[in-house]
Image (cartoon, rainbow, N blue to C red):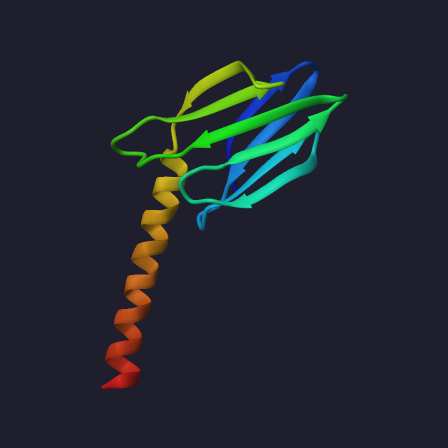
Length: 112
């Protein structure tokens, strides 16, 4: 998983990650609190010290649009940042090339 952001809020370390296949993960102080599959972003909700937090990921096309992370505490926006997804875009590009080469190899050597 590629780390998108590492936030420090209220003495808590919040790590936000996203995999090539769109699996998002939210860890607080190393403990996984939310995991969802959402290629375009999702809402992750969890409770820390009786406070309700929601992290909204808005993941767009890394070449054209800005992606954002919004953090809400008890439905109030407390943090928002723009993020760059260059590492994820590069991973997807390289895996796409590898899949294309594999398909070409299979079609030319095993099928025909």
